[in-house]
Amino acid sequence: MQITKAEFRCSSEKISQVPKDDLKDIAFIGRSNVGKSSLINMLTGRKGLAKVSSTPGKTRLINHFCINNSWYLVDLPGYGYARVSKSKRGEFSKIILDYVLKCEKMHFLFVLVDSRLEPQAIDLRFIEMLGDNGVPFGIIFTKCDKLSATQRRKSVERYCNVLAEQWEELPPMFCTSSEKATGRDEILTFIEDCL
Image 1: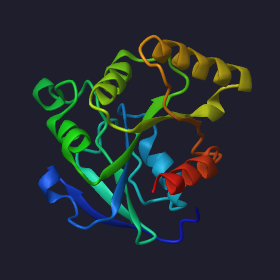
Image 2: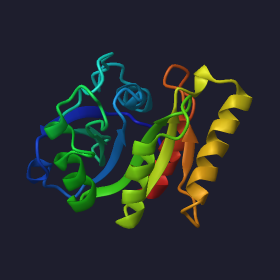
Image 3: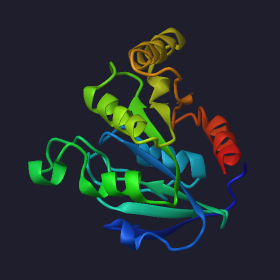
Image 4: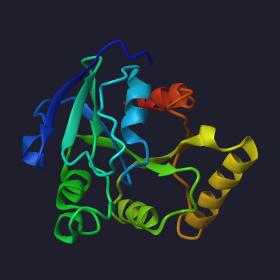
């Protein structure tokens, strides 16, 4: 898939505000500071489309970007950021749960995890919640350029082993680097097939 057009459409505080058309949503979520905005900018080939911040927890709204006038790329708020007040944080905020579990536009969800870290409990709980609710999702390993090929393979294997304890079938997985555009073609081809 070639992305020829990517434009910001709207920010929503609740799912009643998301666009009311029949374009499908392909959504991206992950822990705060996992590299979501950088990945979105890399996928769309537009540097400033999603705002990149060194301060975790910046995305607090559901952001819809219209791609090629045919589908939405959706930037969801990060979860698990400690400097957001407990009431705002919950485990996963209401806005995230409402969107992921109730928004009928959502067609597929990518969960971003930092390839450099051991599988994080909060990511695993989120993935388990998706499985319990039958939400279609895949996993994107970010910041893979920071690892050697061997470290990267071990990181993915570690994740597969942890997930295999609960899952009969593992979700699709992608290794990416926003700096080097690694994984871009694979993800866009997957999205195209998905749609």
